[in-house]
Length: 79
Image (cartoon, rainbow, N blue to C red; front, side, top):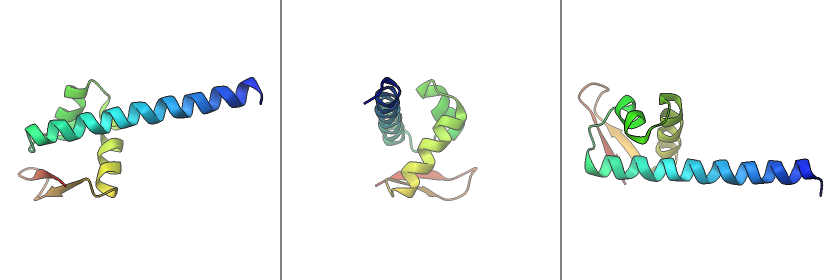
């Protein structure tokens, strides 16, 4: 196996772990306060808003979180 392939596999594993950590952080934040906005979640996790949005989208697609109500007055439900 070449060095490049091993490096790519390592990077994939590394980024998967980072994404899992972010998703767990988001779930913990939403358990504490289910009215946080995506911008607030990004600030509390220390990530860019786009990273938080991708993680939130993934969690929504997996059915782990659901947005109840509208953008302004809604809240998150952790399943």
